[in-house]
Image (tube, rainbow, N blue to C red):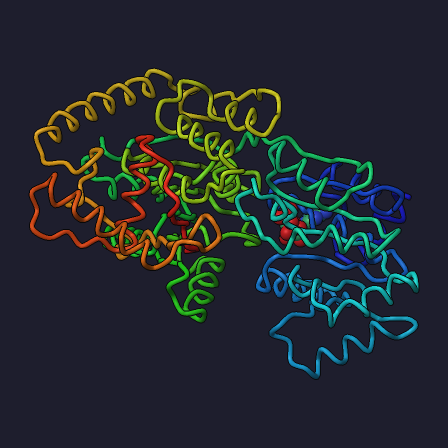
Length: 517
Ligand code: ADP
C-alpha cells in the first residue's frame, strides 16, 4: 500500500514523501475506508492532503465541507493548478457553471474528484437530490469536514450551520467521514464526535507542543513606549500583529510605519479589494507586517512567519494557540508575544460575558481563568497550553519567558501589581458611578469595540423596556455623579449591565454580544 500511496503522492501532488508519519498513517486509515477518522493537527501540518490523496485514489467524489468561500476558492485554485478535477458550488457561482457541475455530478461517471461546499449550501434543499443521488449510486467516496471545530459551541469559530452536518451524515449512509481541525480541546473534540455522528472514529492528534515557538508576555503598561518595544520585536522578520479592534489595527500600523517598518492594517472595515491587496502584499513579502483583527488568518498558508504579536490578549487559550500558531510553520525558530494590558483584561472579560448564554457559563469561566496565562503565570507557557488541550507536559527547554528567565517574569508581575495598586489609589479619589463604573472613562462601541445589542431571552425585550432601562441608568448616574446629562445609548447600557452582572447585583435580561470584526 505504501508504495502505491507514495507513487500517487508524487504523481498527483509532486511530493516525494509524506510530511510526517502521522500524515501517512491518516491517509492509510482514510484509504482503508472502514472507519470514520478524526484529525487534530496544527495549521500547516498538511491536513488537506489527508483527504485529497484518498480522493484521487477513490472511484467517486469526495465532498469537502469548509466554512469560508475564500478558503474554498484558495484550495480549489491550488488543486486546479495541479490538474486535479476540483470545484466548488457556492452562492457566488454563475448559474451556467453551476449547471455544468450539476450535470457532471448527475452523469454515470463524473469527472470531478473533489467538490468543495459551505455548510449552508450543503443544507440547501436544491442540492439534496444531487447528493442523495450520488450516494445511492455509490459515487460518494468520502465526506471531509474541514475546520470541524466550527461544529462546537465551545469552540472559537462556532457556525450554527455546521450543526446540520449530523443530519447530512444520516442521509449519506455508508460514506466514511473525516473530521479535521487544528485546535480542539477535549470538550470541542467531544462535540465534534457527537455532532458529526462519527462511528468509532480512529483519532489522530499531533502533540500541541511546538518547540520552535518561543512564547513570552510583556506588560504594556510598564513600557515607556510600547510601539518602540513592538518595533524592536518585529524587526525579526515577517509577521502578524493581532489587535482587537479596527482602530487598534490602524493605529498600530501607523505607528510602526512611522518607526520605519512597512506595516499595513487588515480588518473587516476595509473594502474587500483592499483586504485582498494587503493580504497578497504580505504573502509576497512586499509588506513585512500585517496588523490584523482575528478576521485574518484562517487558511492563510505562509510558512515563514517569524513572529505573531498580540497587541491585545486573545479571547481564549484555544484562540491564542491557533493565532500564535501561524508563526514558524516552516519549523524555524519563531516568536509569539503578547502585550498584556490590564485594560485588555476588563475588555476581554466583558466580551466573554457577552458571548455567554446560560449553557456556556463554564466555558466562559474557563476562558477567564486563562487570563492567568498572561497576567500572573509563574509556570511554563508551553505546559499551560499543552495542559489546556489535554496533552502531557512538554520539555520546553527555554522556549518561553518563564523557563528561560523566571526571575524576569516574577519581577514584571511584581512591578505590574505595584503599578496597579498605585493607579487604584489615585482613582479612588475620582468620581465614580454606581458599582465603580466611570462613564467619563467609558469607550464604547463607537470607538471600535463593536458591541451589538441582543436579547438573551429571544427578543422579548421591547423597545419600551429598553427605554425604561436607559432612563433608570441615566437617573442613577446623574444622581451619583452629580452630572446634569448622561446619554445612555445601547452600548452604554450594555456596559452598565455588565458592571451590574459583575457585581452580582442581579442577572440582567438585556445583554449584548460582540459583533464580528
Ligand atoms: P493544514 O490544512 O494542516 O493547515 P495544508 O493542507 O494547507 O495544511 O498544507 C500546508 C502546506 O503543506 C501546503 O502548502 C501543502 O501543499 C504542503 N504539504 C502537505 N503535504 C505535504 C507533503 N507530504 N510534502 C510537502 N508538502 C506538503
